[in-house]
Amino acid sequence: MEYEKLLKNVYLNISKKESSCDRFEIKKPIIIYEGKKTIITNFFIIADCMRRNPEHLAKFLYKNLASFGEIAGDRLILTRKIPKEIVSQKIFLYAEQFVKCKNCGKPDTEIVEDKKENYLKCLACGTKYILTKI
Ligand SMILES: [Zn+2]
Image 1 (spheres, protein in one colour):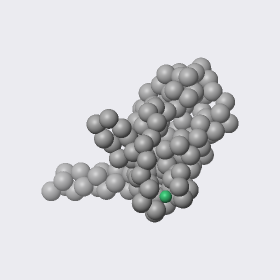
Image 2 (image 1 turned 180 degrees about the vertical axis):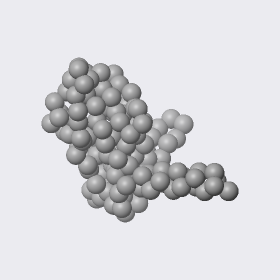
Image 3 (image 1 turned 90 degrees about the vertical axis):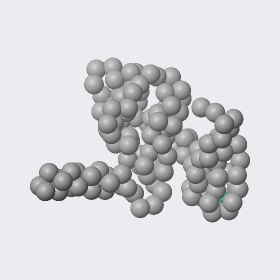
């Protein structure tokens, strides 16, 4: 069936996009400005390369950049005009707080969600600690 073949191809392309990084990396944000809006065009890739949920990173940025916003496909649209350096700094800060292990400094971690708390679990050294809420 041609249609099924087509669907399969679409699915494969999506899967490929979802694993854009082989290893941990803090990507530099690619930013464009539209009027007063700040748009991070590679937002999905940034979150993906840090192995984090885009929603979680977005929430952190809204709070730390004092902006509202929304995720639109691969992009994050912030409702305020924010200098590129500031956005980069906050993404770096996010990695420090929510990706890198406080004990060994490695980024091989995952967020474990509990009913009450979020934990950072390090897959390299086994440390687990409570994360501050965003
Ligand atoms: Zn560790």
